[in-house]
Image (cartoon, rainbow, N blue to C red; front, side, top):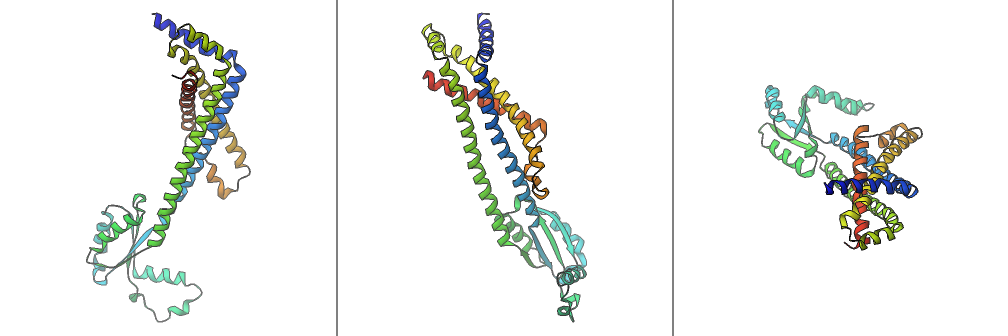
Length: 296
């Protein structure tokens, strides 16, 4: 019962301290809000860019040329390819289709096609691979398996494009991880030092509590409560800043760049994530500040 009473007292003390130090609490909340806003906006922009980059993966395709003596059984050949791991889509390109595509690509220079019959062009399968196989290794594995079919004349695919694409994705993800870690660390540092101001402003109160023999958790808990409350309020402020900045930027950003500032998450998910992040960072920041101050 005594423990329960002490816990209720500590909770009440934490909220009382917030009221008594309202200006400092508001400053801390604004600091947390802007820090989380910057972090959230970075995550949104990176997620949108990452999604667009992976849409480029649809450009990655393989062309499998078919021997003429196997054209009688195209449907079974197509089923065999579709059943292979890593293949997303298979489209048959007949000799007629190949001739039409060639004429389209050489539009205005039809003279070079005089005397060329469709029979000399090979039929083929245009294959698109799944996202997880868009890498030099993944494409190589699929190509090696397809080459084992006796009806395959040749295989072509953009090895150079795949290598460049995979390298660019790795480069972007590494830098996103570095920048994200830096922003998270900076956010935690700012929050911890902002909360430390509140602790120093009540240095005498803490010293008296230590002198009277108060337990560490008894001293820490009100500050942790303050930090988490400020963190939650900062998370809500960050969400408001995100939605407001989205609206303002949408008025000035060109339409073909509008995807960069779109919210890739639902409103509830983004707001909830920022509130949870504020709660965690506020609590951790309080504990870090207290540990340095109390040397415990």
